[in-house]
Picture: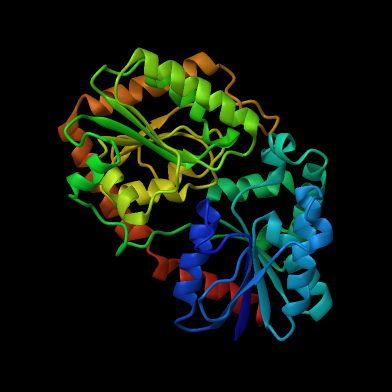
Length: 394
């Protein structure tokens, strides 16, 4: 069976969880399938990985139209595949067109949903309506839709009520348990400006509305003074959200020491070391289908303090592998807390409780590593994905 996997992101051009997911899934599937990757960006060295650039005529176009320009090229080249599998709206257009053009099944994996990301209008303008149309069209015509969590499955069926619920399956994200392991490299942590002998709260994520970074910056002001706040944050969606984060970090740095902002993409060994030395990892997202970064932290032995939203409760066991922070949210798709001050206060309390009890934090970290090993290995995810492929071909 030949499967063409389509993704905007693929190593080394990875900036979010979807890119990590695609890379790991492809590696696991290649043990039994002929998998070809069609991705956006510059040429890759890997065999059977094909890159596509925005056509020159669309280089200054709205990003949604530029994406369609790439999708058209990919759809043409899928000829000969038995099945096409697309990831995120950027690739959904190519997958849908390939289905129509070549009469082959199209599988969609949902890593996020456009109706639940209305802030994308800040980034795309009218292109947000185009991206929403692409996603809806592809989902409603797909032979199967894969949700990365049960929470995401509920969101899909609520956002696209015409879908047959029998075509929407759950296959969780996974984690490479050989690469993501606890690291004792204290010198590497020091080289990044982090003191491994001080307690630390670590955030990793893109600078985007859904990640809740502004709420974390406000909560961090309420933490004990000896706690470091380590922000591994970059790839801003817009200049506006970047300016908001700059302002918040500057204000926090005036109040306390140990506020470290690493705004470049860390290597895996660097990030693994930072996570391994964290007293706790924090995920303050207001929208998170699952959160691979939570799995990365757990695999490195860090407890996770995270918002009880989306698929996060399927990863973080409250009181066992970390803490879940309650949140009541607007139902307009934005994820905005109904009571932002309460959410900030509850986040600060949960973080303070964990960093103030390092023995309990280490116990939760060990439990998190065990859960990652038991439930989220990529071998399990590849088997389940292959079952879905077989179901649409038979």
